[in-house]
Length: 102
Image 1 (cartoon, rainbow, N blue to C red):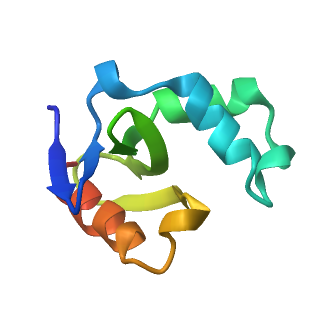
Image 2 (image 1 turned 90 degrees about the vertical axis):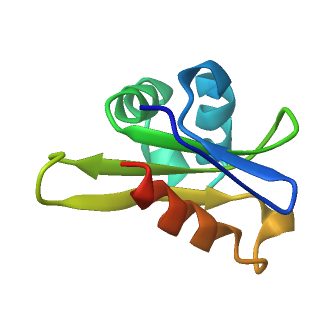
């Protein structure tokens, strides 16, 4: 099921057609914990989770990955928000709306 939510010109979606895995790997690699993973590991993790991207136009501005058994539990992993958007509640959008989309 494809999920989308918009707020303040930002689009949160899990639409596979909008997910650029190479750009996601680049974004994650820039985080303090990112270099501990290989690109291959990151890509496999993203592909085997509910991955949500935060887009401003066509520009990747963040992501969140949700892992679930689809019945009783889900947890959020790898929430990343572009430095320029931090402090604006964007991570909360990814948390709240992303969980609603699972």
